[in-house]
Length: 258
Image 1 (cartoon, rainbow, N blue to C red):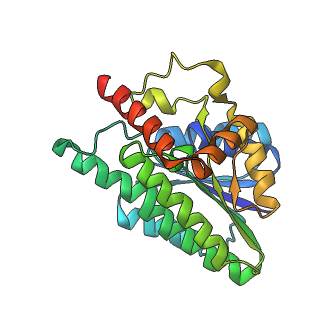
Image 2 (image 1 turned 135 degrees about the vertical axis):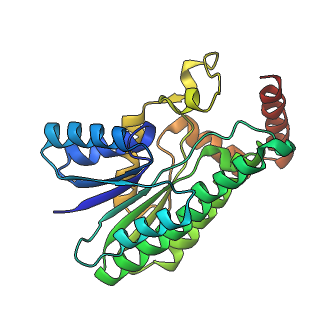
Image 3 (image 1 turned 180 degrees about the vertical axis):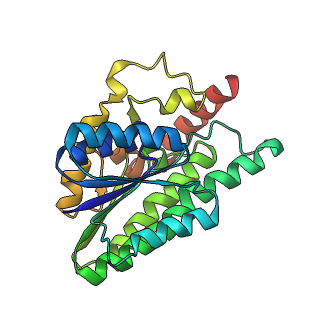
């Protein structure tokens, strides 16, 4: 039976992936820091969907923990068909604040270095078997310039495409997921007040996940699971950079006020 390893699989987009894949009969390996929450989610999904759920407690800002997860991905006796590189957190912080250097370093470890290590491990193992799917969760923020979070997600977007090109023709697909504002607990946990955003900007997490899985199965390099956000990303990618910088400056100024 196919299995999927999901980082950050106990909340937000990661949990939506876990529920959808479990509903499809896919066994799960859930990676997160909170052991109690891991056990709770594993018990729920196993009971509801009848799949095997393995829990792998790990802090992906810790190199040894990340390498332990990578070893699980490369275990030839327990092949993993899906890697969902989802773990991350909001970085509601200015790049000029010297008190946040440790936070920025942790963000780079979790959302860049861990993605690099785990993507490489999964890619090698899947290439050897001739099949598999990797989804790297980036963000629509990758197309704008709102602090280090945008820089990190731009890296994740570029890395994902680079990995896809290296694995082209091997039977392994790599898809960068570029969501906009998704209705999860992510923003509240990051201290971001999104209550005044209009309803039109929001994406349902279940719809996002289903489209992402479909795009990955089709071998698409990027998944933007909503027409309005596809239009926004097209403008950000191909429109005048001056407009993108202006919007980014406005967003940055708004964050400073909060």
